[in-house]
Length: 189
Length: 100
Length: 310
Image (cartoon, rainbow over all chains, first blue to last red; front, side, top):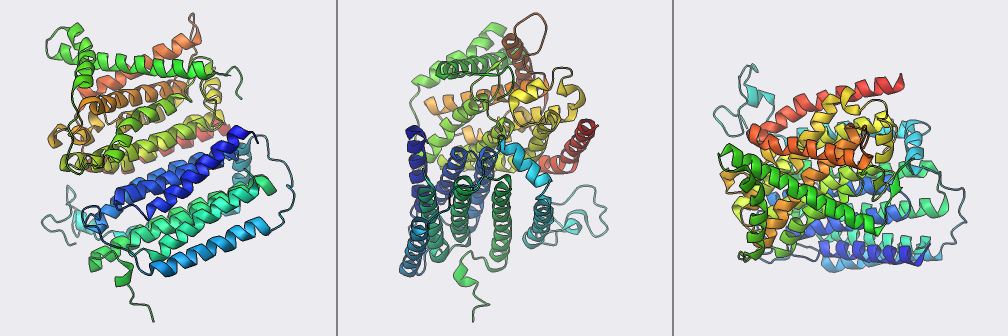
């Protein structure tokens, strides 16, 4: 690996960890959420360095989208702005810190001490194509399992989160010409 | 950039996530901790894949991790919304009905 | 690397930046000219108006607001231009491209998702109610346009059998994709208009909320955001040309001329849409986007897949 790419890796690595720490240090909900987004983008860029082009770009795409939505949930649920009213929103801070440090020591120690085997095999020429062939070929069962799981998640999440169904919008016999909005006359929710 | 360094960075991300998931009181902040842990998992998986066995199948594992993240987010938001509607609260400490 | 595609060096990157700037200014001038004509003023004065407005904004002093989150605000304002540039990086101009990524189509998609975050940040950073409502409106709209846009992008990629933009252009040697993917093309163009907060999808910057995300912007910040919108439109038009209109293919002239001519034509149509259609409310858009547009794009993909397999 060339020294330039090595330097890029270290910069990205520091950014990803620093942004990750910032998530729990800053006192603004928007900043916390977007710090996490920065951490994900940095990791996505490291994946690009590892030649995982498709996965890297997809990680960036998905996570920026998720964080944009997450910021809204944060602000919707917090109901107050910690930036204006500083208060501690943590419990068991010392215990968590000790546990987190312990996890780090175990994982990093393991990573450094284990005698990793030599590399087996060479990457395919076009990694994106080889991924597509794996997903549509030998590993199709994985995707076949993931897709009903995602569908079930969609349905379950909607059932949990929506207070109003189509009968609330279109009336008991579903005959209303225009759907009723939340809180309008005749709305059941 | 070697396998060791990539794994150490991944371990750091994972540990920060562990701290967040354990210490935060707000449900959405707990989810951010979980996300950060999965972020570390993605990085570690990518490093192991590239440095040890860069076969195409390994990338499928990463896709599965990303899908797992999506499921976690969707269900987390749904539960948070439900909790908020029924209790006007978003703190984990106020949803301890099942704790012994 | 795709055949016949040359990756340009740093100088080419500068050229691409300058070109994007010129195209964006042309778009602004066109919009000004059309506006002036509709109001019965001289067309030329309307075309020059964006330049004077730019000069005025450059000299204007920034207004600041109590407890504004300047960091996030600035990121949002500058980000739109940066994202537009990153999009242009994968758009080939004739045979040249800044970055011939093997996943160029996905890259473009990832960049347009960045716009979600950036527009919301512009709305949030201002610490003003109208701006924040604008930011929320944009995210509500984004939930409607993003999926159809993603699937529209998938069409040409399936037909070309590659995510590399150069391969997609090369696959249109015989027949432009717009001919047998009209639905995907229209949806893509609508997506471009939507992520540029423009015309019918400009509710986030609507007049009814005092300019929404634009409400509190002044001076150079405002200039950057307005320029960012035109740059996004230009980048989207360029990508539409590469994806659906055969890139630089055409008779007589060199391919880079054709790319520019087609891009400007698409851009003119996208800019002109603003004068033709009313602003759509994001909540109404959701129903149409999910129940009508999304299935239509999926049917288009089915058709494309059938043709490719045949």
